[in-house]
Length: 313
Image (cartoon, rainbow, N blue to C red; front, side, top):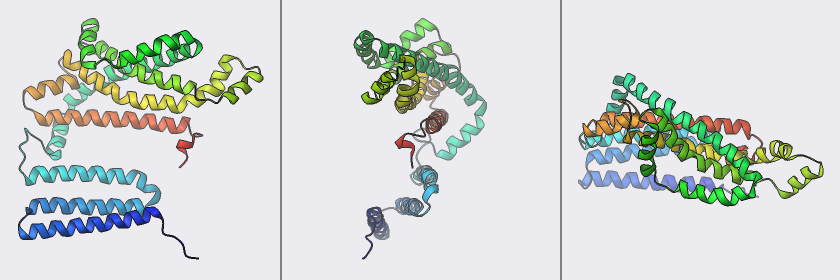
C-alpha cells in the first residue's frame, strides 16, 4: 500500500514552484529593462530568504520554532537597508537600519535614561498596580452578582474611552512625573485583565464545582484548587494583551506632559527637530522592551500552565 504525501509537503512544494516562477519572471523583466537591476536584486534576495525559511521550517524540526522568526526578522532588516540604499531614500523620510543602530549605540545613555523613566518608573508600576487591582476586583465580582451586573458594563464603557482624552486629564491630576504615566497605564490595563479573569473564573465545569461542593469545600478552597487554575490561561492572555498596552499608555501620556526625558518626550521632541534616526531608535528600544516583557509573560505562562492543552507541543 502506497504512503500518501503529507498535505503540508504538497503545499510547500507548490510554494517553491511559485517562488521559482516569480524569480524567473523578475530576471526576465530585468533583462529587457522593465525592472531596474536594483529592484531585481531586492526581489532575488527576498526569494532566496523565503526559500531558506521554508527549508528551515521543513527540515530543522524543533529548531525552526525560534530560527524561522530570527531569519524572517533579519530578512526584513536587510530588505529595508537595500530599499533605502537602492532608491536613495532621504534619512528624514526613512533612515536605514544601520543608521538607526548607530544612533542607538551613540545615544545609549540618553536612551537608557528615557527607558528608565518611561518603562521602569511608569509602565511597570502601572502594569503591576493595574493587574493586582484587576485580580482583586475580579474576585469581588465573582462573589457579588450585583457587582457583576453593575461594574462590568461600566468597565466596558471606560475601556472604550480614547486614551488621548484621558491622558491629559490624568497628567493634570497626578503631575508631570512618573505617577501620571503609571495612572494612565493602570486605566489601560485594568479592564482587559479584569474581563479575562472574570471569564476565566467561569471556565471550570459545573460538574467539577458540584463535586467540590459535595466534598464540603469552602469558596476559598474551590477558588484556589479549582477555579483559579482553570482561569490561568485567561489571566495570562489578559497579561500579554496588557503588556503592550502598558508601553503604549506610558509613551502616549508623555506627549501631554513629562520631565525633560522619557520615550514619549524624546519622540515628540525629535520629530520637531526632524531627527528621525533618534525617533526610530526610541521606537526600536520600546519595541524590544515590549517583546521582552511579552516573552517573559509567555515563559511564566508555560511554567504555570504546563498542564493546559495549549502548552503541549
